[in-house]
Length: 150
Image (cartoon, rainbow, N blue to C red):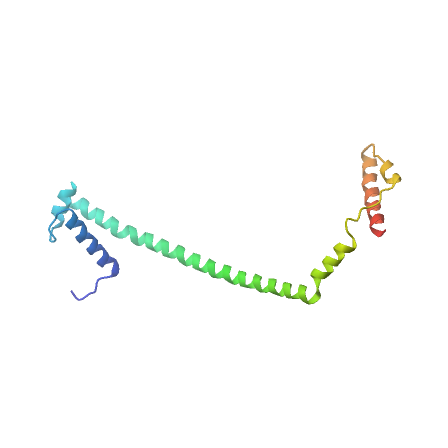
């Protein structure tokens, strides 16, 4: 025995030994005895072993690929997060430097609850047909522009 066993092989052998011990088989039990105890042929036993051998490898490979994709996506998200965090810190600093919070607070105190004055002239006009409704829309837009200048 010149080759070393892999970690998966060592784990499989240890697990097999535990199963043999639990089922009261001698440690040197051959494949024919194991298959007879399971109620299957030796050929079926080897087919099951081959399926078991190939199945986890393909699953392991797909899991590895998915893990690599997730790692790449995680790194990209971390980079984007760092960029956004840097920009956000810059904005916060700019707001502090320029005193934007104080300006907004001052603006709120200067114009608390300002309401527009409505004129009787504006409330009298009621559109009756489609052309009048278009005129009313233009009239209302003009009224809003005038009110914003006051």
